[in-house]
Length: 60
Image 1 (cartoon, one colour):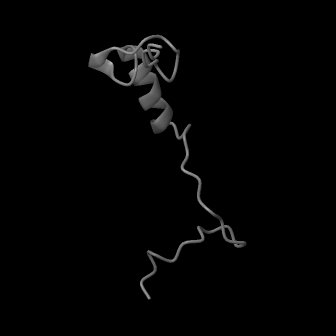
Image 2: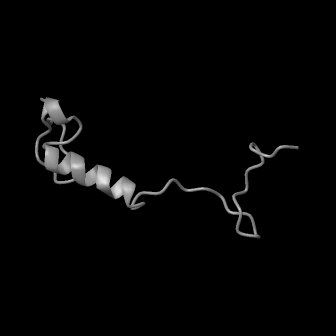
């Protein structure tokens, strides 16, 4: 059984090599603007006081 060709993660159209993993400059730019506008977020665990529960960057 042949595998399905990869699709654009935004609109579902077939991907174009020039804009991989997207199908067009429009979808690529729309994704970038979503990142710039903080539409995507990387989840972090929050401590009860509302700060990130991560001491890797403490100076101590």
